[in-house]
Image (tube, rainbow, N blue to C red; front, side):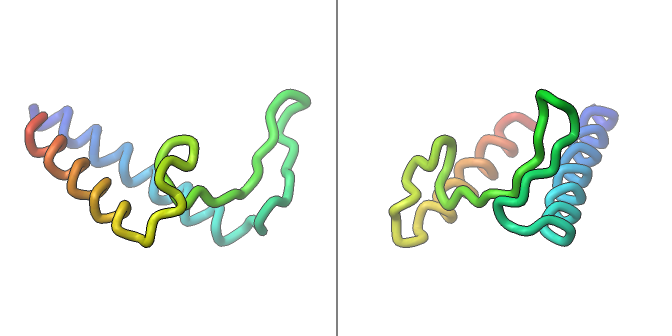
Length: 76
């Protein structure tokens, strides 16, 4: 189980590192063409998937964090 937890931690660290790099080097809505069929564009989604609950007052962030923590603890 230690290997899987280490792999999960590595994936989370890489995810956070790429998010940090993108926010440091990209400007909003600037298109960077990687390949003819693949572009990178920095956009922000204030909600969940497909902007679900994006018009909330901010309570949804805490809700989604709580759901993720409970699900992670339960899985482990």
